[in-house]
Image 1 (cartoon, one colour):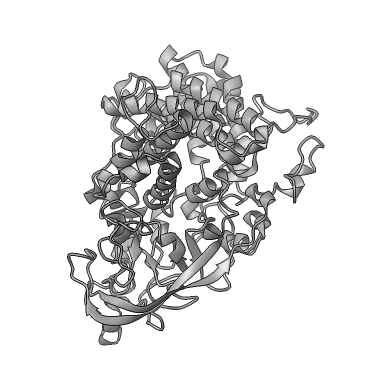
Image 2 (cartoon, rainbow, N blue to C red):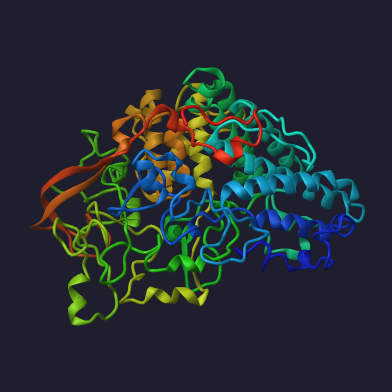
Length: 614
């Protein structure tokens, strides 16, 4: 079962001595106590979806907030990149409480910046005390060390993804130590993280259930750090380091670093071997269970299993069922809603069921019937005009809302209280999440929304990118691993019932890369910080295509679209008079590729400078 680390899944590991948190003798002397020390590192991982009642983790081009919004997304749209650390709506990057002082609260006080540095220090403290672990088997000692190394590497990886190269601290700083640790280049920081990930992978098992150490909690180990987690992040670390933005920061060349991409492909291939051989429980879920990756209804399990590779612990997942939260459908304030809408320009990434992008002249896309025969994930993720959004009995006064009205002037169109763009989001909740259908009793603890930091589908797509950029063609594979870049992308499309990448795209590396970019936008839409970081590392933010956030304005026509063409329940008419309207163009300068560091931190010592341009 998919259960919480530190709560349900490892109670026996937390039965440590009362003063073990502060006593170096008791805290580290045996495996049970030392694992209890390590458990806090799991709890220190921020649950980015619980930062507030809004979508503060979406910082890219995928969504737009209601007019007058104050989320991080709004700050960035206006060119205020200090917005990750300011404003009355806190960013998940910034919330300044650390897990050791958090009381849960509203929202849980766990932001990345504070908790990453806290966790790095804690990991270093644990590594420094490994010799005190005398009451443990060699396997247990390896598992402790492997987890500590992973968390040090992971927290550095997350920090440098947003802020660039950092000092890589590998010892416990003392209160009297002279702070003179210089910032490293991105490449140097990534290489240090890679060393930690590689060492951790060599120490940890593929599956804790198949070890003597994991036997006491067998069946409840699926959220523990494994060899699979470490290899996935080792590959991601190298792929990021090899991407144009990071390579430019390190070498001056805004191109892919071929060597780093080959190292990334190697790590991904090593991990996927275990998946292929079924030595790991990780697998792609069938599309019929796709929603279980994001939410569950009527059960106590946390979403994600068995595809999630790394997630925050489930501190308050049921909180996200709030009708005004990011997990609600944004249709109309009368039945429940919010102020977040999918950017109409972003929705264009969803291609046709045959696998072709809507811009391809052979795709069959009909601008007069734009929602017909699209990628099945389009209907899973996006609410369109005419979709059924009420399923139970409704008061007569609310019956008009049963089928959403997203046309211009419709009851579900509002710049502040429902859809601003002509689309709404449905990926993370059942459609019954509304005032009338009662949010399927979200607060019962049996309904949860929870999003992973990384899923197995992400690894397949990163593998495809690493192979393409490291070995040159879509038909290349990592030497010794029989999976081409093309096959890796098609594996994700096949799961969704989408046609393969067309040969006209496979034969041209540039065109194939464009399909990887589009596939990542669709498969990983609205999840974690993925899209924001993808556009940054690819250095695409200066492209008007991504800076503009748009709406579709249209009237509802009179021609009914057959249900066979639009499988989502509802009554759908072909739109007429459709036009795209630019709502805003994000303000962006080249130095905004990196976020500004906190002023108070760059004043700590002279060799920790601010990012250029701020």
